[in-house]
Amino acid sequence: MSLGQRLKKQNATVAVDPPAAPAKPVPSAAPAEVPAVATAKPRSGQAEKRAAGRASAAKAAPISLEQRRAQKPPRKNDKLQELKFRIHTRLFEVLDLARADEMNEETNGEEVVAATQKILAEEGVALTKEERQRLLREIKDEVFGLGPIEPLLRDPSVNDILVNGPKQIYVERAGKLELTHARFRDDAHLLRIIERVVSLIGRRIDESSPMVDARLEDGSRGNAIIAPLALDGPSMSIRRFTADKLDHEDMIRLGSMTPELVATLRAAVLLALNIVVSGGTGSGKTTLLNILSSFIPEDERIVTIEDSAELQLRQEHVVRLETRPANLEGRGQIGQRELLVNTLRMRPDRIIVGECRAGEALDMLQAMNTGHDGSLTTVHANTPRDALSRLEVMVAMSGIELPRMAVRAQIASAIDIVIQQQRLSDGSRKVTSVQEIVGLEGEVMTMQEIFTLERDGVSEDGTVLARLVPTGVRPRFMEKLEQEGIELPDELFKPPASGGTDLG
Ligand SMILES: Nc1ncnc2c1ncn2[C@@H]1O[C@H](COP(=O)(O)OP(=O)(O)OP(=O)(O)O)[C@@H](O)[C@H]1O
Ligand SMILES: [Mg+2]
Image (tube, rainbow, N blue to C red; front, side, top):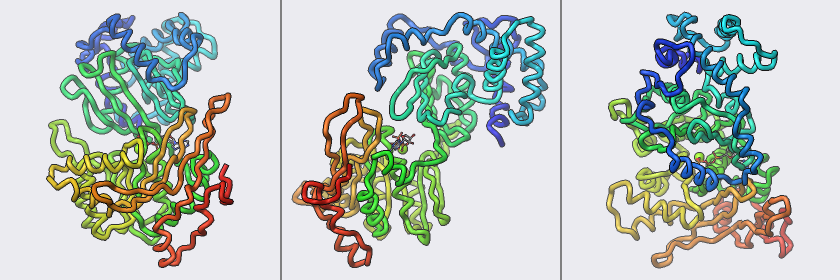
């Protein structure tokens, strides 16, 4: 079923906003079907200031005064927006709602266009050809898609779409946040679009359950949070799903990895070492996990466990599992932990957990220590050492009480390598460190760094000058590699100063 088809059902109930459609929309009137809006507080002066403060704190790139001025759309635009909403409301009176479920842009696009043209003629509005085309596109986005953010979803250069209330929409492009001109008309409009997204996964969002993780049909990951938790209007964050995930060659081209690192990690995956990718939000952990997974040999059975299926493995023998959120009654939730326990009964050669967040860490470590080598996961942490501490905390979250040292010993024997991924100040994403876990010395986990990011300041245009270089430490797993007959030249680990390759 297409997005349009699935959304249409929702349209049938919400699009008649308001039910007895007035000729002119009344901004303050909330549609009867979205009760949360009726109680959504209007922005107070304070809230406005808080929002402005947060916006300036959140932005990675400074936004110029001109850009801020440009935020305010010209008046003609406002009029077009009003017209668009009037048409949208009337469209649903005109169109045959009995067929709502079957409608999608491909088959019903023309019908919507014709109905719109008719309404335009009745309204007697004079539009230029350009305005008319734009209006038609926007109407179609309203009817079949996610309204004002639909163009952003179509833009392949956009990674994230961050909606902070109806009037402030940021996107992330090439690692940088940018404020866009896109706008929702008001809280009610934004909420209606959020409800659409949420209804796709059979959930609902309202005051009693004001935050929801959702997945768009194209695989993009979304989160929405509304009043009373979100103070300044409904908020939605979308991580765009990229069908063409970056591969290791892209990473080398982008300067995120070096050929030497790729060769080392490929060998480590072949050797079935247990690897943790560590990094902050949006640092590229999942992308790197996908690349590591691509090194797994064809003849191994892979089971992936994710909250929202993002990994795209090219191998044939893959079983993909996804967690299930609780249903409307708050029941039926199946978490990563349960999936992991089930996976162990599925005779996996490799287990890939999209992101370790909580108690599943314990089961993952136990799996790694009981013969399920070659497992891969990611952890949200700022340094490799933090990643190990996070794992300790996550094990405690499993609810099973274990002595601290026992947990540490498990971690030290289970994890072989931690790769740190980071988004740098220029927006680029890079591997900044690769560390091998050596063992436990007393109470301290010992690690040795094999690759490190050498920083050389920042160029005039803001580019971070940095290169990933070997530290000169020969990894311990080299011996194992030799036993397995996997070749990896010692030269890979020579730092540039001592005659190794200059990795630039
Ligand atoms: N090395 C890279 N160079 C450029 N872009 C990258 C790189 N790695 C990842 N990206 C892009 O950055 C975005 C975030 O990547 P990814 O989803 O892998 O991050 P993440 O750390 O898993 O995020 P989250 O914390 O939200 O799970 C994606 O759009 C991805 O295509
Ligand atoms: Mg991720």
